[in-house]
Length: 271
Image 1 (tube, rainbow, N blue to C red):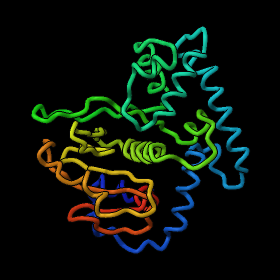
Image 2 (image 1 turned 90 degrees about the vertical axis):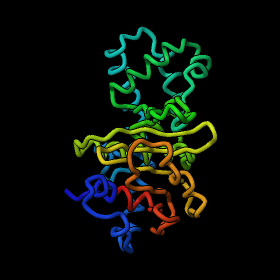
Image 3 (image 1 turned 180 degrees about the horizontal axis):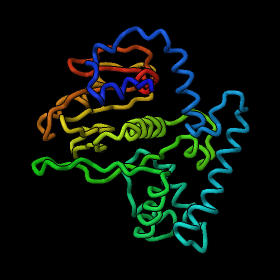
Image 4 (image 1 turned 90 degrees about the horizontal axis):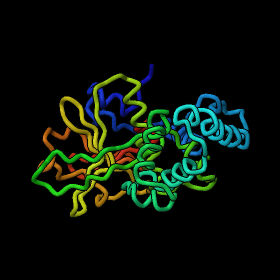
């Protein structure tokens, strides 16, 4: 099996900077990524000969089947409307700090019900809850989780989105693909986000036995040195060494943004 750039890094097979070569297959990889960002990764619609309209219809039907069969069986719900409201609100707030109380008010249910519905969504592999890293008692750290949908095609179907992804939706798509690639290798790794109350943050923090991989995710097609500020300077917070720092984006150039911080195109990082 051919491993992605990220999977090679996770296995510590090659130094990150040694993989920063001119990628002659970038246009092909970018096309694969763009297809994934539009329709997700379900095998049933991976065939390039399937029309886009048919893919969208399949995703809508999948969401409908999931609601009418899987959730009814799992949660024993008499009415689906409260669940669908919470599901849509979670989708609209993907990759943002989760405020259970706010979602509860907007959906007309209790915070306890929101958490229960979210548990069902996690059990059925619809979402992952990215817990905040907060093991340093001396630092003032945000303790709210983020929620990411495991398939961006399903996310699109739930919120009926056809146009370009927002920055948060792009972040969610990248985080979920990284998560799935890591889990497919059966390696011991824990996933967090990190944010301090004074504004320092990392979109994805992966903890391995040897240390951390810090990842900042930008939808932008041009990244700058300024984008390297968040993955830097975490040594005074974390309890293990930082093995790698990445800025993942749509910028087609691979390069070192700042000392120790590598900018990698999302298409290269994930394929």
